[in-house]
Amino acid sequence: MLDLRVPTGFFFTLVGLILVVMGVFQPSERPALMDTNVNLYAGVVMLAFGAFMLALTRLSKHEDH
Amino acid sequence: MKLAAVDYLVLAVYFGFVLGIGWRLRKKMATSEDFLTSGHSVPVWITSLAFLAANLGAQELVGMSGSGAKYGIMTAHFYWVGAVPAMIFVGLFMMPFYWGSRARSVPEYLKMRFDEKTRALNAISFAVMTVFSSGISMYALGLLLQLILGWSFTTTVLLSAAIVLSYTFLGGLTSAIYNEVLQFFLIVMGFSPLAIMAVMKAGGWSGMAARLQTMTVGNGINGDVMVHSWKYMGHTSQNPMGIETFGLVMGLGFVMSFGYWCTDFLVIQRAMSANSMSASRRTPVLAALPKMMMPFIVIVPGIAALALSQMSVGYDLPMREGVPDYNQVLTTLMAKFYPAGMLGVGLTGLMASFMSGMAGNVTAFNTVFTYDIYQTHINPGKPDHHYLTVGRMTTVVGVALSIGTAYLAASFNSINDMLQLVFSFVNGPLFATFLLGMFWKRTSGHGAFFGLLSGTIAAALTHGLTKAEGMGGWITTVNTFPSSMAQNFWIAIMAWTTCFFVTIAVSLVTAPRAEKDLVGLVYGLTELKHDEGVAWYKRPVPLAIAIAVLALLLNIWFA
Image 1 (cartoon, one colour):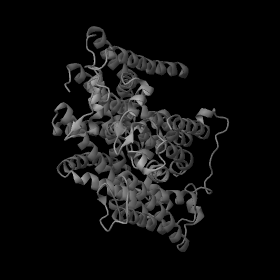
Image 2: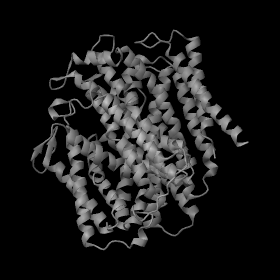
Image 3: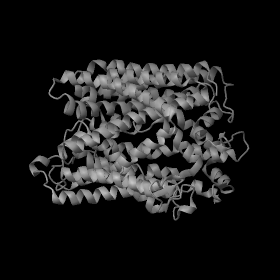
Image 4: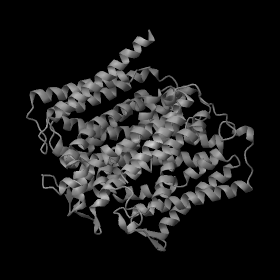
């Protein structure tokens, strides 16, 4: 059976990367009401979540062996 | 609102993953049960998040943020009073019978417990209801995206329907459930930054409260009502919802929410697919934890929007024909707080919530149609692969019917309101039937059937005899409610009470089923396994207690 943590992990890693790239290379892209690099912060959180999901998968594979 | 290339990229990546999950699961679908019920094989963390996400449609995101701006934190009653107690109840007390009976659907449980006519009544009304509600939410999404992005209604409807159809057709219920979990994470990730920023900009919770206390919201009520969930519940004239404690607790907290969470196959199906009895009981209990946090993501931004509109910082409530258009609160906030990139994630989250809601409806519809209508009444006794094919075909038909309904709703606007009213008549009495069926072995099939019928009639009569906001009173008006929400609560209370007593009365004069036929279906005749020796967080009861305490604390904190 498909381990759902794998696609979830890859999805958020990818979306997180897209946002981080936006945040780093287009830091002037800011919302109308806040002077915050939203893309960078949200991207880092998503990247971390994606990596966490993938790490969990690796971890449980080790336990199985 | 204008989308940049990166926003479309995020949307495309999401569509790719959703379809990929369906594609990877296609080979697992060997029997009709694999396709329609996931063969009791899904791990508990997945079933719980799917249990929550199947109910988390786009209308909930859009509607709840609008209600936040209109009614304030009182809207959280729909979570902290409405949902959480019912979710705990269904997990602890009802899943043992749903899961333990090995019924493949809620109507099938009714057949096992009562008789064929009770099943048929429930199956047919449920099937019609799911098709219409997925059509109506498709219509709502199409309308919203047309309004904010200028996308064509037809493109939105057909594209989103095609994607939902592809992944449910390929991987059945498992695919729908897996995608619902991905959708849940995306909704949380896509909308919590909005909540955080909107509240920060409005000066934090205390800054918002101070701002709102200086304003008046409808009927001369002070804005302080927006930040208290219980303080102004003594009388209907004290709050903009026009409700009071008894109507709220009995109508919403007891009848309506127990009727939904404890009997609606759309959500129960997720818990039934769990891989053990304990896991199926923990599914709704665990789902209650993220559920009680949802107000912070969906309601609080709406309250912040109202506060921001008072601060001349460049945010105004969206208006339409001179009155606030609350359905656009969420999207106008996104436009002001999300730059290109994050805007794509937020929009994808909105699409995801729509898809999880629609896939939930479609997968519940095909199971009920295939097993409870087709296999029972139209063409019984065929080999299993025949029903697998029928299940797949029903998925296509279900999506097609939903599209038709979406267009129907688009051309006859009043049809929405009328249908939702009819659904509430049908749903109102349901919980009384299940409660008596599961906990009183004397309840007979005739009792259940006539109880349900009379409950539905009582609901319609209540609507015909009372009036609120110009609705109802089509017989004569004996009472006027201050709001249609109060009227709905009381319709539900009347329906439930009538069904409860009629079921008891009819059961007492008709023959009950033999006790040996009720083993596994009724409390007292079912052996409940206790799971001693397992860690507390893996046992349903201690988990339920911990979650109930948390919900209580939230109610007190925001009282």
